[in-house]
Structures are given as structure tokens and as C-alpha cells.
Amino acid sequence: MESVVPWSELEALIVPYYPKAGKGRQPVGLGIMLRIYFLQHWFNLSDPGAEDALYDSLALRGFAGVDLGRAAPDETTILNFSHLLEAHDLCGKILDTVNLYPDRKCIRISMGTIVDATIIPAPSSTKNEKKQRDPQMHQTRKGNQYYFGAKAHIGIDNKEGVVHSICTSAASVHDKHM
Image 1 (cartoon, one colour):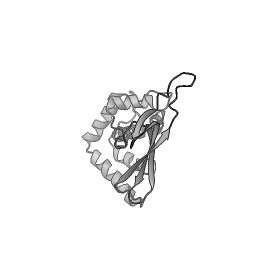
Image 2 (cartoon, one colour):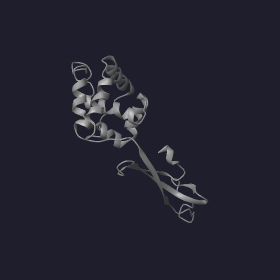
Image 3 (cartoon, helix red, strand yellow):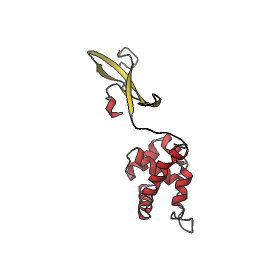
Image 4 (spheres, one colour):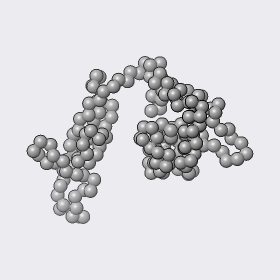
């Protein structure tokens, strides 16, 4: 997302309204708050959910720029940032900036994705040290055949035929959920 979202342009929209450092508690960096705001929308996170996700996911902390040595912004700070954007009518301006950026950079994003799933088999045997199946693997049926394992869900652009995303899940997860 570093190359698709114009972070510096978005920060320039918000910086005139963002709290300045003073004698009280120092504000969280604008870049961090802006990335958390986007994470909330991308992953459908509430304010408390965003705070929890920052503690739970090293990847989200790294993307947002939250150091492991410091506390992540709390849900009230996240809520106040959203209110700041709403109070100054910045949400629409942010959306316009993000939507126009790919055109200016000659990046073409089109609608339509084909999702294909590949079953990754796993041994269903319980003849191992723990006498158990792998708890992350599940059973699924394809036609009249049953399989045990995981699925690789592959997203392909329907016009260009380019793979744009791959994620894995238990074999029992339906493609429409990915």
C-alpha cells in the first residue's frame, strides 16, 4: 500500500487540523493515525478492535509504524482521530485523493476478480506422536471425493489474468468467504 496510497498528500490535507505538540501529552504521529484509520476500513475494525489488532498483529503494527516498545494508540485516541476528520470534512477529500492517485501515476485498477481455490492435502492419519490430526486442517468435499487439508485461495484479475492475491485457510472455508 506504500505505492498505491499517497500518504504524504493525505497527511498534507490533515496537518493543518492535527493537534500540535505542546506542554501536555504528546499527540500520536499523524502518519501512524492515518494508517490505523485505513486499517480500520480495510479490515472492518471498530475502534476497540483496531486497538486490539495492533497488539495482536505484528504485521499491522509494522504497517502502522507502532513501535513494540510503546503502547499502541488506545480506542479513544483512534475515535478522536475519526471525529477530527469528520469535523473538518476531510473524509471525502481523502477518498478523492486516493481515487485520483492511480490515474495520475498511470496505475490501472479494474473491477472483477476470479477466485480459484486449490486444495492442499494433509495427512489425515492420527499415527503420529500426539495421536491427533493437525488441528488447523479440516475436511472438505469436491464432487464426490473428500479431502483433508487446507485451501489456497487465489485472486486473479478477470481482465488482465494477473494474480493479485493469495491466502490460505482450512479446507472447509468456502471460496465466497475469501
